[in-house]
Structure formats: C-alpha cells, structure tokens
Length: 301
Image 1 (cartoon, one colour):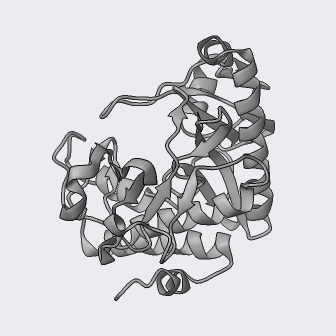
Image 2 (image 1 turned 180 degrees about the horizontal axis):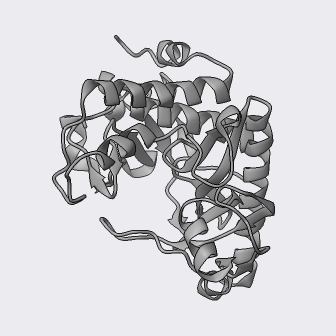
C-alpha cells in the first residue's frame, strides 16, 4: 500500500494489510486485490477495497447496539497523521487492538458452499443434524452457527463442530459468540431481504478488548465474507448468482489453468463486471450511492 507505512506493517493477507500504530491502535487497509481458489490474481478490481471498507463501516454503525466493535475512526479527520496518505482514503479503518478468538464464527441461513458439501457427506453441518432431502441453496429451518478454524496463510479454513469450538474456547465464551453471531446475521438478513437480497451466510471474527469485553472485529458482512444472493435470481438445486467473485471464478473455470499461483491476468470485461457487482451490493444494502461514499471520504478521482 503506502510506502510511508511500511515500518508499521505487522501483517499482510490476501486483501488487507495491518499496521500497528502504537497507542493509536491498528490500521486495517483493504486493497483492491482479489483472490480465487486461494490464489491472488495479478489484476486488481478498481475500488474493491473501498467497497469492503464502506460496507463494513455501514454494518458496524448499524450493529453497535447488538455487540461492541473495534472501530476507532475511518472518516476524514479521524485518522492519525501516519495514515494521512490520499491513497488510503475510503479503504482504511483505525481499530482497537483486540485479543482475537481462535475461531471463525460462521452463521448459515441457507445451504451453500462447504456447508452444502458437509451436508451431502453426512447430513449435518458442524454437528447440526439437518432435515433429509434438502437441495443446494435451500433455506434452513433456522440460522445455524457453524464455527471454523482460522487458517494459516494459504490454507483453507476448516469447519469444526460446535462441540469442538466449545471445547476450544469454553462453554461461556461459545454461548456469547454464538448468540452475538446469530443476532448480527438475523439483523442483516432482515435488512437485506427488504431490499431484494438474501444473506445466505456470513463470517464474523471476535476478540476481547483491554477490559475483557467481547468485541466484533475485522470486516463485517461484505461480499468477501458473505454470500449475498439477489432474490430474483434465487432458486434451489444449484448455486444462485451472487454479489461477489462469481464473475472471476466463472471466467477462471473456462481456462486451462491448474489453480496454482501465479494466477492469470483478468480481461477488462471480467474486471468491470466484478467491480460493478461489488458497487451494486454496496448501493443496494446501504441505500446510498458509492460515489457519495467516495465524496465523503474525500477520494480524489
């Protein structure tokens, strides 16, 4: 990202860099990188990082009454001087330092992705025994909490049972994160449904602040951490269209590529289609234009 921040860099993921600004907190910066099949593509998606940040800010503001979150600042005037670079505007969040829990907190309202694979293999997902005969993308009777391990760089998250998660973090902690995760999911799913969008599933991360409070961290209910399906394209029996990397995945499946790094360059059509899908998700869910977000963040075009 910005060369002026390199001395503060403490972590780099597929999409984000994390910088330790001392007593000011952590700076999370979302890049325009996109990964598919666990490989980072060489072609960025314009403004993808700003969409992820804008949507996270939207949800953090809406859900702070459900559970506290780690946000300290993101808007002009709220970031320290070290983070004052123009290229960071709209894609950086100043966050409280947390002691993160060692599990991913996934909530599923529909049967998709790895949940669908687990169901086909065993009739259960993370220890939740589900009704027989469900199709792919079927709505579940009630949302379920399906924890996963936190993968090391380059590895896959692995689903674990609720019992394994309870043993790992303790019964009291487990009950707290399960309740918070489902409450967050139900709030967002109801909001989205009114706007013609289905929240199929989503992933949360939690940690403890210096006072020991349970706090929501990381990105929240973005196209990278969630499956958002348009209602008018929803059907069971196959994977519905979604507001995420679908254009990229579909294109890559047409290539003679072995799904190992380096990834192929993406053509302009795929880049534009993916960027438009991310922006559309932002605008539908936030009831505001993405250009307005960029203006408020004082992004120079």
